Length: 216
Ligand SMILES: CC(C)(COP(=O)(O)OP(=O)(O)OC[C@H]1O[C@@H](n2cnc3c(N)ncnc32)[C@H](O)[C@@H]1OP(=O)(O)O)[C@@H](O)C(=O)NCCC(=O)NCCS
Image 1 (tube, rainbow, N blue to C red):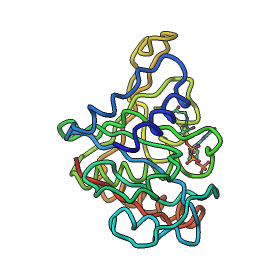
Image 2: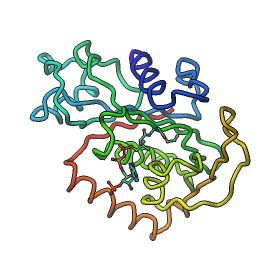
Image 3: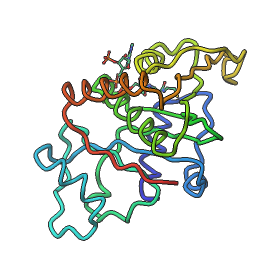
């Protein structure tokens, strides 16, 4: 709940026009969805301890807030113990939403604050979303993306999404078409190999991350 104002602000900044705001308060009660936020670590040296503080709300000396540019932790907003007030002040720099429908994990939204892009955060969010999907036994990941959104399509293609169709005039603001993208079976050995390789590359490039993925 306490993450809603920041996450809504990130969403508004990412989708200034033609986007229906996610009703986060309602969505937190949706057991078929998860929302994950990427938080900036207040102190890179203490980042792991900070991320684990979400699991241990009674930590006696939580780290102080700061604004260094390292994003280290992702936590699910579902099912987590209430974090201590100091941790609540962490800056949210990106978020992702996933709906689970039959055997599909549908990525409904993903966004990273403009000034934090190209630092592996979108990829970290996608990694965590895919891990959440694997935990829930989803068979494939799916999503829709604007035909003009090359940045997002670049990210999705890297993770094995392929265009499988279009929805004509899907976006109401400018009647832009949506590309429907989907992965092969995420449980298949081929996808697992791709995923593991990308996950390791991400860690080697951007540093280790701690991911807390709550259940809906
Ligand atoms: C799409 C988005 C989430 C990517 O986040 P990001 O943190 O900048 O992405 P990353 O730094 O993790 O990049 C991961 C991969 O995405 C692709 N990518 C990201 N930005 C790109 C760009 N501007 N051009 C081309 N490819 C891009 C690349 O393949 C990149 O891998 P690489 O670093 O090996 O080249 C971000 O651009 C965003 O928030 N956009 C606005 C909201 C949006 O359009 N969301 C998607 C629709 S729901």
